[in-house]
Length: 323
View 1 (tube, rainbow, N blue to C red):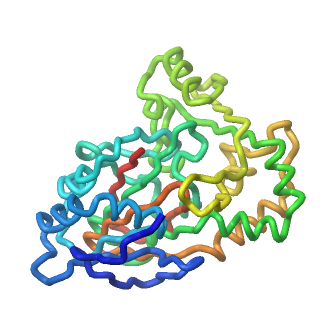
View 2: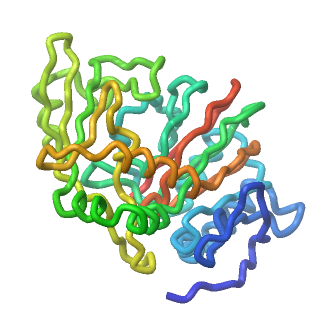
């Protein structure tokens, strides 16, 4: 596929932490072409005129940042989301979140003092978002970056260092488990209760919905539940992404944690040194993105892992997930 280099309605810019990875700029920064074109109406007009090109740029560069526009609140952010024809996809996962406006939700509401580990959004669910869009309403005074990682680079480096372990995990598949309480606990970055996650307080209905998502459930005496997912693949190749083999799993994020586990689907344990080194590689390949007020950041969720650095309050980042 060929991509147009005529930006027309945008000016290409730069941002702190920007990198070139395999010939592509991450993130690609688009700014108003003229000082008087930074209003929301001008931005929406430019997006609607260039929808196909814009989506191509997200796929090509994996991350695309709109900066310098007057995007002030959830209502403005929602108008940007609806400028495209992407369908909404409901978030399923452990992060506590609150609905804000139409297609807009809060990002993970867990304590800002905690690091949210790198992940593809909803990586374990049968249907995950293709695009994740983030909007910064209030940038933190210190910290709070949203780092992201080109997923194919993790696969390449793990194959270089642990070829046998990678191929064993790929051949056997992976199995994960996660324990959740019934109600939300915002004191934890993984504190979303099963009632909120499945949109019901009825255990039978929750089981039905979990089964549709590819999960098995085991009820606990305290009203909580342990969900098990698997087998899942270690890596995936997606159309239109140069045949790159993405590190499409959450082994490092769930292995050996208090409320979660990751192992091979036949019960074989994943060697601790492999998990530890994988975490180091992910960090080494990360791009540290620092927020400014009004930023709107688009991620190709099939190509990037992302996380959240600890920060001082206040920090307000909103999110939308799209098919």
